[in-house]
Image (cartoon, rainbow, N blue to C red):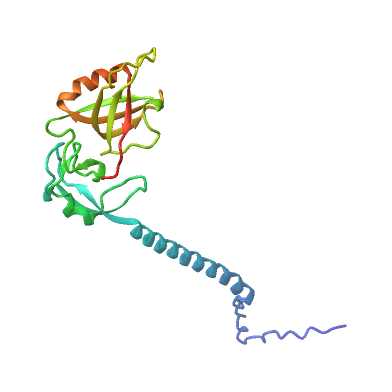
Length: 227
């Protein structure tokens, strides 16, 4: 038989002191669970900062200085210093804007088309002289592949427009009519496969050339490009 040895307060004596609850212990395992989360958060923040810096660096290096129209310019007007300005922008590779360091060479040129303020200036919109010039006319000729050389034509090429035989293929004793011209522009019509060549000719030859071109009985001859 066991005896209860638990002390009891004596009669008239003070009560025993209360037993304080033990404080919860933080185990090493709980600390270890929090540390990987903290490290993962730091890694994410560092990676985000690196990506932001890389994007800013790439964006800055993709920009370039180009010329932009500062105020409206009418076709044919001389481009003055106050008409254009230099800006730094990110340019689409499909565009061909004029570099900002060419500003001095562009001043004094003429606008080949109407230019509006805020648009990028491209080489196709600027010309040293207007076409057609004084005493010249511009005539468009639609040609099939058999009526022109396979060699690509460029603006400034010297060509001859020659009258060809009729539908029956008859060739007379007379020399074919030939008209000297200068190529101004070339465009291809996808629907018909024909090529439209715009040529500049003296005013006196323009009506005759236009009439012959309308019949389709002409051919284009490319002369030597060596000067």
